[in-house]
Length: 414
Image 1 (cartoon, rainbow, N blue to C red):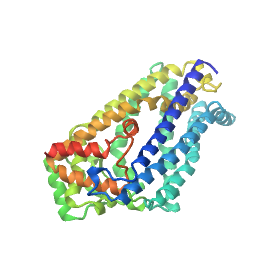
Image 2: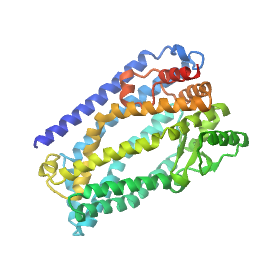
Image 3: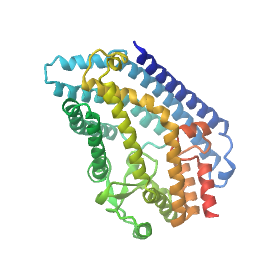
Image 4: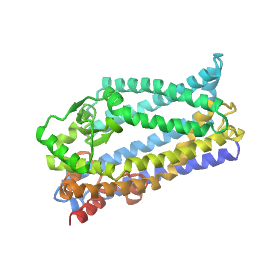
């Protein structure tokens, strides 16, 4: 134990205590407003639907608190409990090259982490989501997805880890800058490749076959100056009853995607308004702005890693005696989420600003009233609470609360 140990443990304790306190605060606030639909929604949301959303929110919070505590135990087991040291020694004992040993160590660390999270993911899907009528998944599909995700992680992870370790070993003191540039390039490549090559591994995407709706969408795209590879419907109902719409991709691979569940929930006017909101993110350059923010944060993080990886106290402060490039990356992956937690309110505030801007854009090219109706329908369909605790919402929710968001839209439509 050294000074960094106490700094890290203090940050971990503060993060965990804050998360648990906010979660319990959210549950109490939602429960206190469970028996009355907010006045602004009395004509659209029934009391039973409002209570379902409240119960769903409370159940997710209760489960989330258990998951938080479990995550802390696993984190401490990896570090001060000797888990990373044990795993590293196991691979070192095989007598392989340092590069191959580092790659295998990090890949196994990631895969073991996924396996440790698997029981919670299974419970969330087949108990929590099923209890409230959202689960459409099957165990066979669930484990098939897990196997595909693991294989993709192994393939892409081996490439990325190999590049990272080579740069750390061969490119001098500024390796972190070169690695940052490689990471940005990979992120851009994934934005381009994901819709055409990766997403179809998990879901079926079919061209929109509703001629009237397609014409409306194409007219909207023309008004917004947006060109895409196509308009697709995703079989989201295979796994969940939740609905959504989004655009994805980069360059020639941009796509408009509707969940089939969303098409079954909203009418054509509402679908157009929801898509107009998504296009608002494109027109207001929110995707580019988010990429810039994340690029800056990742640059700072890698610069810190470049410095800390040469410091003995960094390893010893986290319960590890072995110093290696692979160990530095593993410790970085474990530690950075703890310190990043304290940026949540700032990132949430920025995201909400973008949501308001996208709503305003949608109101200008479509209909604010239709977007309001669509939001109310989606809040009801997805059992999203209409009465979140304001402080909790400010810390976590990337979208403004329903009442605030609709009030802003009504101002735009006035």
